[in-house]
Amino acid sequence: MAVPIIRQDADLAAIDNAEFDAVIDVRSPAEFVEDHMPNAINLPVLDDQQRAEIGTLYKQVGPFEAKRAGAALVAKNIATHLESALAMMPRTWRPLVYCWRGGQRSGAMARIFSDIGWHVAVIEGGYKAYRRSVLTILDDQPGKFDLTLISGKTGTAKTKILRAAAQTGLQVIDLEGLANHRGSLLGREPDMPQPSQRLFESRLAAVMRKLDPKRPVFVEAESNRVGQIHVPPALWKQMHRARRITIDAPLEARIDFLIRDYHHITTDRQSLRQLLSRLGKRHSAERLAQWDRQILDGDWPGLVKGLIEQHYDPSYKHSTAARGGHTQLKLTTDRLDEKAIAALVRQIDRLHPAS
Image 1 (cartoon, one colour):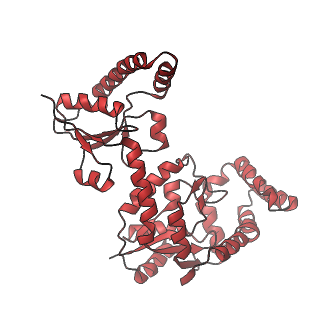
Image 2 (cartoon, helix red, strand yellow; image 1 turned 90 degrees about the vertical axis):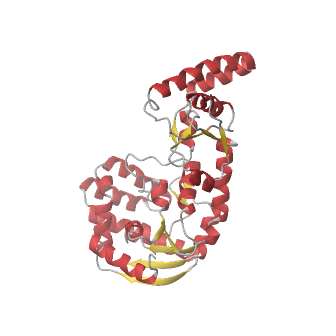
Image 3 (tube, one colour; image 1 turned 135 degrees about the vertical axis):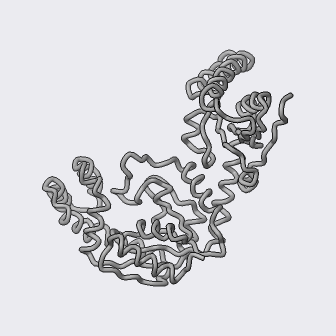
């Protein structure tokens, strides 16, 4: 006898409380890459090509023919999953399944799971309902947070400090980590493409849901874009109002830190030359030519010093004045190695203890 299929509300807290053993997204791989629920796995009942072919058949031939062909493909694909990814799942396994609207694709997999004897649930309204819950979190949660920005000029190890603070138990929103980008012209992470805007927002909402509004939340002072990703309006508005802890370090310490932290860029000089050539609207041809010679010569201290003094520091001064907010504390350090970063985090922790 088949086990009853549960209709699960898309409320994320309710899903967490239900403690499912797996979250299965049965949409096509392209849909999954665009966005998906946290920790979901992709077991598509139709792949990208099959989905396109069935859609074309529906329009050009008719609904009946498309449904018949689609059902055959869905059955084959679910059978493949049962013989591979799901082959070792025990009788007590409890999956949660969703598709675009919580209809045919998730329903097909859920019915087979139910016949097998697994206690399966389907998200009511599917991905679309989940997406609405994400947007609600992004709109509502930031206003509840007591935000403090970790601020400072380029090369003051703000991201390292933020992540070290998270390791001590302080509450952190790591926008650069969520966006796979360091937030500047040279910020692309090697071999790590940026997520889509929607997937970034899903990741951000998942972090926000775990934060305690009664405790301070730290975030790095960013622009409203991190690479190609936009910071959601409600969070950006709250960041404008936030206090600042400003990190101050001498120029030489910043140069040393940046050479270490961006070592991966110096291994691909041609790409670096192409990136800096994009600054032609903001800097003279002579300056760009100088930076280009320094790249070719491997003069990294000279290049980094020039970029800081002639590009990044003026940009920082302008953006800081435009954003407003007030400095709660200025922390000064002579070095930016691991020991110095740990000392800075201890000072932040004394101001806002982790517990």
